[in-house]
Length: 181
Image (cartoon, rainbow, N blue to C red):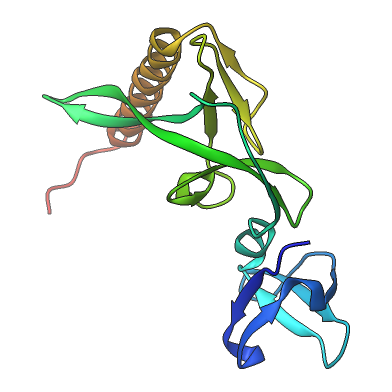
């Protein structure tokens, strides 16, 4: 097992991953934040608030990957008032077996290309096929063009839904007089 660290201010600094006995079940505090107890082999448990995804991304083992693998994500940018899906690729350096048991892509920017847990991450294979990994829904695309088209269509659909919602909020109810401010 690799020596992994988790930095936590209540513990007075870094905690070695192998000192963690278990991570307790999640609960919600009175402020609506997700809370878990981190039980250590020695010492008092530590209360984690919203930091568990970061902890779960810690690699406990790193494995080599096939040459030519890349992570790929699509960001949606606004171009002249229209959403446009733009791909971003990073060369993979390996695979990381993380504390939560998930295997995630590793790049120079870190596990999941430095993205927070819960973000969609995809791997592009040398043949051009693209597959979602980790928490991502098991979605596959034949190539980058198909992936970009998927995210482009999704962005246009979400924008239309938002515009319809906004228009519905601004529509006056029949029979009510509009008042000037």
